[in-house]
Image: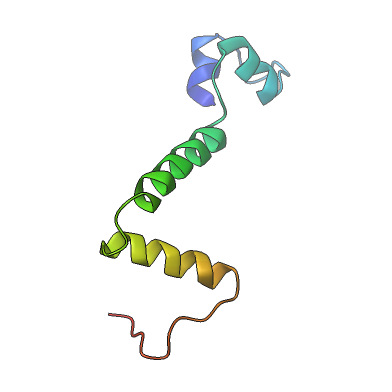
Length: 77
């Protein structure tokens, strides 16, 4: 946000909210960009074959978020 304010030549004592700065630059907020890229990575890993370790780790984490415990023989490395 600081760099965007500098590009637009907005001084620190000008009261301009972050939403207005984003609107003027036409860019997304950093949190939106991170969420979008995370979802893209999730989709990429979710489409991998079932025997790929990254896919198994992803689904184990998703199930753990839902409250499902891993198998009894599962051990963390």
